[in-house]
Length: 129
Image (cartoon, rainbow, N blue to C red):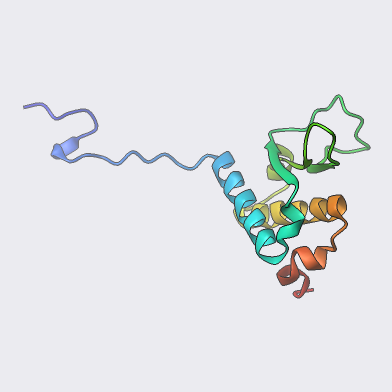
């Protein structure tokens, strides 16, 4: 009798698909948004949090590729914070570093957009300083 594909010795093999870098990044963003929501839910009330792979380089950036951008609300869309996945990932040396940079970037952009102090958006991190 032949064993079905991926069944050596008649036992099914679990397919191990390592998490894609984008999976981890989206998890970091979701965790960061949840953390801000616990401390200061009004900061997220009328703000969309989005992720794009890279910034639109046709826009006039100063001297370096941005990690994120905060956009004011317009008549046809809510205010928006866009995190750029690849620039953030490329600046990180570990997953822990990536998690921290995602959170710091999100908090700073929300603070800029809403005028709410970083210390209020993220009191846990602010108390460590």
